[in-house]
Image (cartoon, rainbow, N blue to C red):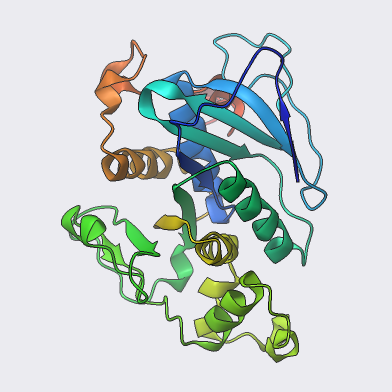
Amino acid sequence: MDFVTEQGKQRHQECSTLLLPALSIGNVGQLAVDLLVSSMKAERIGYLDDPFVLPCVGNDAYGPIPCGELALPLEAYQSSSNGLTLLQQRSPVVKGMMVEFAKNLANFAAASGKKHVVLLSSLDFGKWQKIDMSSGLQIYYVSSTDPDGRDDHCEQLGWKRLQEYNPAQRCWKHLSTLAEGNTMLENNLPYEDELEEEDYYPSLPFAALFSCFKAKGLKVTCLLCYCSEGDNMQDAFHLAEAACNLLGLNPGTFHSNESGGWLIPLSWQTVYGPPPDMSIF
């Protein structure tokens, strides 16, 4: 994985927290990162080139007007005032190469002096075993602070540890083994058509990223929410607010003229197309 710095830009060491999405259902993690980059007016400092990420290209994602500045698969943004580096991933990883990609990303983060990695991702609502909507949308978390994934700060924020995280379970254990560079148990992983219900969570991209960052000795916090496919903009707001709460940031202080401190990215105007023509009803 190579990092290409944009002309005239530089990485600041004080931005020791790395925030990035883990691709999953509904693209909520990516939407949340878009919202944070736009609202903080974070500057793009470069991009990452990795052989395991599919190529893509698009127009400027943030505006306020499309100016022809290309958007690339893996872009790095920096908000010095918030001590934060944000990484946006716009295309998926080559099938079967998620662990290798996660290793490359973990090596990059460690070499760049990052201390804390925050992963934003979503989970399939259809897999939710114990549905509790009494307090609205619920944030779940997994942390590297304790072996069981628990974190006191996250608990104080009212979030629930993802109960399905079990480091002793076969797939979670297998991921940990691969992340540490030991491939002796590679043949012990079940085939895709043999996966059981408990194997769903460790099969997701956030699990591979979590395991590889943790293996590098970095503090990792995964923030997760359940959703379905469709218009998930509200889920993105919810996840972005959770990230701010975790990091002690106040969206009201962001460089935005809109209420709540949030600045809607230009690219969101065309995510789900125009509203229906009401004359047809």
